[in-house]
Image (cartoon, rainbow, N blue to C red; front, side, top):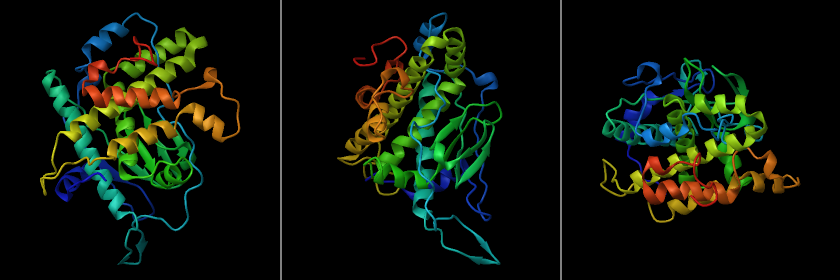
Length: 310
């Protein structure tokens, strides 16, 4: 299991906007926004992308559709002054920890490159939510909205039950992988990668899905970079490692579980690489491991490298 301390979780509360139920508490965080989105440490990647047909440009969702949210799992609810215990309180605290730890990691990388990192927010919702990208239901799964004025991550906790039951990827590190992947899309957004990808898709619509796959694989790789960083650190409260033995296996299982080929096979569909938007199970595992094994975001370059053998 991923060890986390409540001190960091409390610090991360400002990066979680809880919109569940009528009693959901709204927390919006931010730090050192860079005017215009700025550049960052993946400078070699950005340079390579200029004037080159790019890969990526997905919908910034996690890649699978969730089933209908489970009944009986609301957040804090206003019941006439009587506070109801939140059954997802531990999950919420874990999300707060993750949003602090993942983004502190990226803040450090940006700082090394002489750049300021723009913190994002995780919006927790149930059933449906309004975002800068429009209204979305829980069925879309976790997603990132890159629209100006938004640039936030969205998740319904019911998705984690689907990830465990339907896709065989239980565990808190699997949950962490999902959030780190979506924050990876935030990195792509604030560095201009997402915009460049959309331009490439518009100029080369015949390869739109190929571009999408490569962008998603980069987000997987960036999630692996965070996992590498977390494996080097101890919790503030107990001094124990954040990541235990077996956690990475959970992440790899989650990456494999949401490959386009596996999803198509599970749905009884013909496996067709031309329709993929997020990559195969093998590709998603490969690129998560690329980030985890190297801990270097500049090696997260599926735009120029073989997506099967980076």
